[in-house]
Image (cartoon, rainbow, N blue to C red; front, side):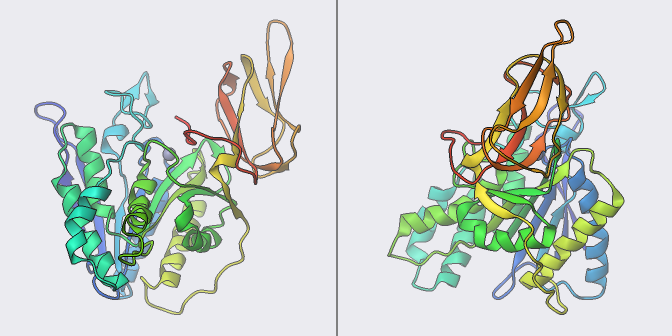
Length: 374
Ligand SMILES: [Zn+2]
């Protein structure tokens, strides 16, 4: 395994942060695949960091046994900026405190720059086109202008991942069951991943808004397919998935060891690790439109207590939580607007009016506009 250190733009004299990446196998070439896995882009979401810790040990052993046949890059901690942001003893890892920007939004697009550079080299051979487009995309990413530390982090993460066949971005929700976000063209491959990791639901969209990391990796392929139309065959050459490893406090060795093993099994199934191909597990979840994932907002302010658990199937009109005014003793019921899977809820227990406190994944696409929360 080779360790690479990538210096970010210095935020202050005498200070410079580094992104660390662990490299297994050999750089992918003809006939081999590349997987890129990063943990804790939202730096206060720790389950991914513990999964990466276990994954690293499993990959070290596989490497020592000569079993890694593809290229695997593991970034065990994807956000050194957010890791050092604290306010009054609270870890603030989701938004950069300098700009207020979400660390998992605003990944710049190099789709058109790479397309222009690649166009004259494309042929009727899809595998050749994938190689050319990956090369030109990586070049465009590496040559893109960055001015700030945050932008330099985003560019390095994209540079490491943009030419991968498989991209896993390990996050978590507040309190949740295992679930995923991916773009619709990635769903056939993601469905297989979901079986291995035990995902209860995958939330599917295409350009959900504000360019999160996983979409930045996968969207180039369907955009190029649209752009080049009948002229050149362009496959969806990257499956990119945001994996939500349950809730923020689900940071336990047994869970993480099993999650790491499940990822190794998936990579072996996909052919990046030698050995007998594991059997495809049964699905315990499905894919549903992100536009059908309904946020439940508190209509008032008060103490929040849930009366249903994440993982339960709920019906439209079912009460999920109470918000209690401690002065008047008034109890406000928060109800599910749809039939669906109650898959995530907040861990805060004081609700303010308008706060999104839970999410239910229904089967019908209902919402429009930007589909991701803050
Ligand atoms: Zn996250």
